[in-house]
Amino acid sequence: MLRSASPLLPLLALLGTTSGLLVRPYGVAARPAHELAAARRRPPTQPLLPHRPATPTPRAAPPRCAQQEDAAPVERLFACLPYLLPVLDGFSYGAYVYSNVPLLGRAAMEVAPAVGAFQSSPFSGFVLFIGLSFFTRNSGLPRFVRFNIQQALLLDIALIIPGLFGAVPVPGELAVVGSNFIFYTWVLVVGYSFFCNVRGKTPDQVPVLSEAANLQIGPF
Image (cartoon, rainbow, N blue to C red; front, side, top):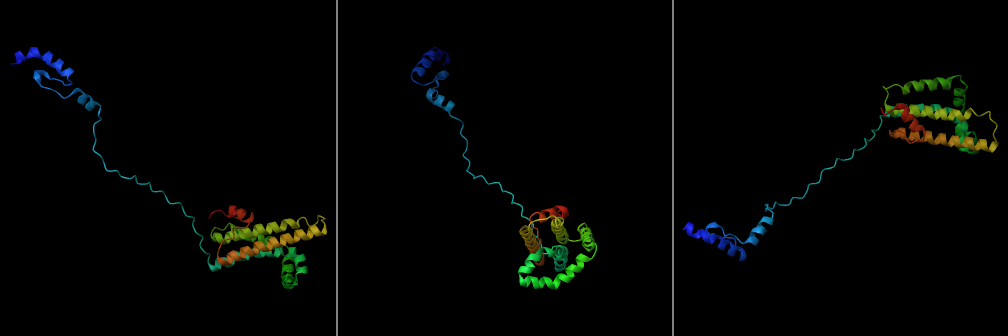
């Protein structure tokens, strides 16, 4: 049987090609040629996976600034005391204000003897300045107190500098304007510092002075 079918194989192959069928040896028909070509070009199918939405990467929460704790009542008291030095040294800048505002003039007359005694005592301001400077280096004190001491010292230096030019002749109106400006600035800085200290908050919003005090004291 096999031998008799072998002469017909070329003829069957030719007929299968022309009719679109592939004929395997021994007379077994194969799949059509166009289906085989399509099967070769078709990519292998993969099982469909359920779509899962991408989970967003959690972001780190922004750091929060540490809130300042209120100072103890004793610390508030000791933070206010250093400002007595610039109060005594800046008292004289309000002479023109005292003469034009009767209420302030009467109050100034009440404290003028104590201020005069302090200013007339030799080296009293210098000794007090050096003593306060020593406490700014004492790490045993709270930073709240040391900051106020340092800011009071810087304010006192700022008040002393204009007094060095007292001998320079200036017009009377300019002297009045300059003295009043220093007095009002002195009152604002001291009043702001007292207000913050009574509330237990650091008075660190004074331009120039607070920044310089922070640099001198450091973060701790």
